[in-house]
Length: 80
Image (tube, rainbow, N blue to C red; front, top):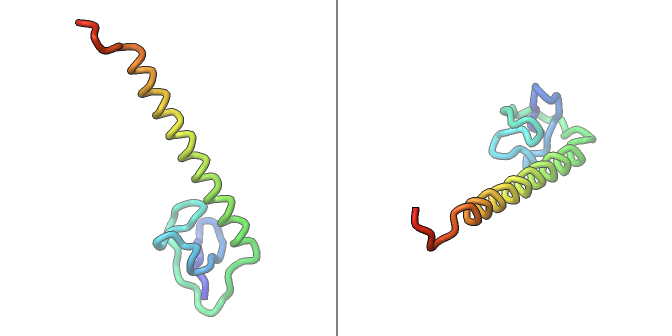
């Protein structure tokens, strides 16, 4: 059994459909009968999760430096 994303046209393994969502586009997936997952499902799944982890790391990096810049711009102890 596989889960099919009509937008990406990929059949995913059951454990790859993130809470009923396609790992690559985020769209909904539908259960496909006895068809097996696509040959490229494993590779696409790894790529999608690596890209999500990279985006998350960049977002945390930006947030850290934005907060740090705010701390430097308004040092404690100065009266305004």
